[in-house]
Amino acid sequence: MKHTAARTRRAVIRATTSPRTVPASASHGPGRGGRGAPIWARANGAVLSVTTRLKEGLEEAARRPDRGDISTTTVIIWVAAVTGAVLIAGTIAVVIGKYNGKLSGL
Image 1 (tube, helix red, strand yellow):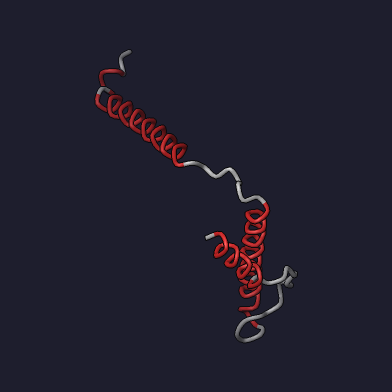
Image 2 (image 1 turned 90 degrees about the horizontal axis):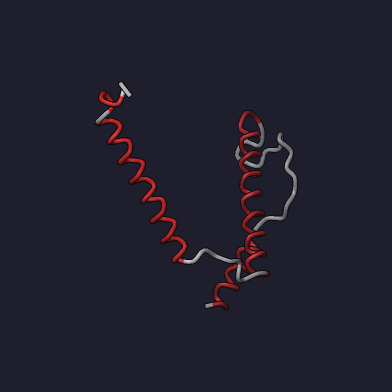
């Protein structure tokens, strides 16, 4: 399994573009100019930033395979804690809503 994952990482890293700056007025899409040029430049910039971030993440994963991923137990504990907090807050809201008129004289 590790061999396949490493091969996939290498293929993705090779497929990414080299980081380069694209002027805001450059057009790399259909029409080669006009009103759509800034849109294509922004889209290319967004794709470049996403691929660069993906490449950096894959390089970090290859360099440090044990990144301290969250365990299943931790996720279960967090979900239980958040669910409990929501239930308590909901109960308080229902009680305040039910007795709102009676509590106003206190």
